[in-house]
Image (cartoon, rainbow, N blue to C red; front, side):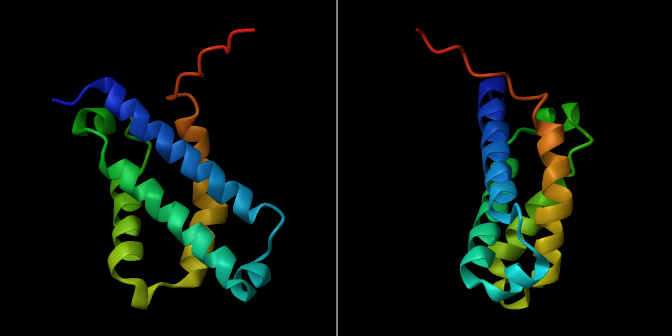
Length: 119
C-alpha cells in the first residue's frame, strides 16, 4: 500500500500542472490557441502531466476523492501521449478552459498549505 504522502505529492503535482495550464490560457482566446503552436504544445504537455500525476495516486486516494474524474484525466493523458495523430484541438482547449479550473478548485482543499518559511 502506498503512503498517503505519495498521494499528496502526486495531487500537488496535478495542481501545479493545472495552474500552469490556467496561466498559459489566461487572457487567450480560441483563435489565439489555434494560431500558436507553442501555446498548444505547452497546454498539451501540462495536461498530459496532470494525467501522469493522476495515474500515480492510489485507488484508496481516488476513492476518497470521487468528485475528481480520475479515469477521464488518465484517458486524456493516454490520448496525448499515444494518439497524438488524432488530437482534437477544440477538446484540448475545452479541457484547458472549462475542466482545468474545476480541477483546480477540487484539488486546492486536498493539498495542505506549504509550511511557513522562517523569517
